[in-house]
Amino acid sequence: MPVAAQALPFLIVAGALGAALAAAFGPWGAAPAAILGLFVLLFFRDPERVAPAGEGTILAPADGRVTAVEQGPDGGRISIFLSLFDCHINRSPVAGTVSGARHTPGRFHPAWQGRASSENERNHLVITSEGGSAYGVTQVAGLLARRIVCRKRPGDPVGKGERIGLIRFGSRTDLDLPAGVRLGVAVGDRVRGGLTVVARETPVLAREGRPIAATRGLPGGRA
Image (cartoon, rainbow, N blue to C red; front, side):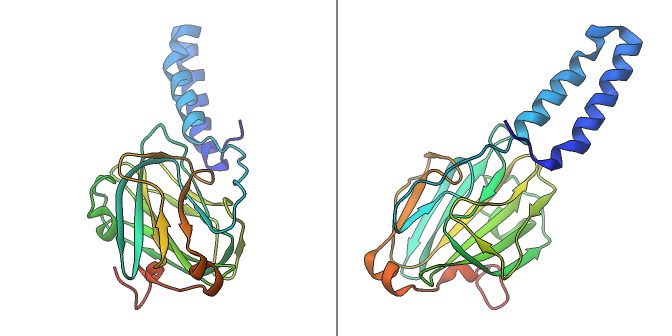
């Protein structure tokens, strides 16, 4: 299975540690370093995925468990908690263009807490779909996650399910949705980034496109 390039520094450390332990205690002495190396490979796994076909489908931006689902007249939000054992690659929920980006310094509350979305360090992208609707993807740092990686910048095109970045060591990903979408998940559901359909555009939204609360976290948007 492919592994993200961000794993390399940790693999080098594990290899050096293993060599030192093996020299000092023999082959079995390197077992802790081998376990560490396996964990790094598991955490940074970067599987190839093919987004399911379907017009108007909105995909999960991350692997994990749904911890919050909100819907109102101005739009909705789905929050996904990623444990240490989930794949931490983030993916675009729709095909379109990155129309906004902002990194916000903050605290490091446990990612499953609701206040993490507004108080923790985070990186927010707005992706304008091909139909003109705006979707927000927020990468939120957690108690152990201290490094957010984002590969996209304003103006970059993205495909549905395409990789947009990752978060290291436990985190949260929020998906802001336009008004008029139909939610397809509930709190407690397990989802897979780039594969699980979490919502669907209504026919009116798919035809007209409605920008919305995906501006949360950007200048002038809601925090």
